Image (cartoon, rainbow, N blue to C red; front, side, top):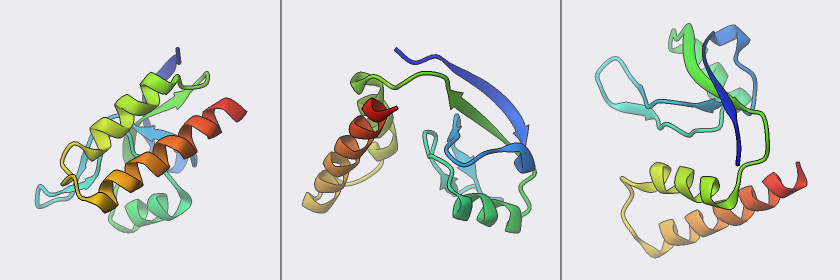
Length: 104
């Protein structure tokens, strides 16, 4: 099982690979990024350009279990239609993340 530290960080202190702990909404209320999104350099730059200054994130301390990976994918895909493409994408992400978590 993974332990994670959840913190509110200044955007400049957020690191690639950290994970959003809550949905991020645009000023109009639309969801911009979902809880569980792994932050990449491109996403961080996009958030800077939109004026965000801080984010609630977690930094996993240990490897994620397969159940935790599946729970995060379920949360990320909960609002998606169950089309063949989306089902394949979720399966691909599960394989990728479960392999990545085992490599450490």
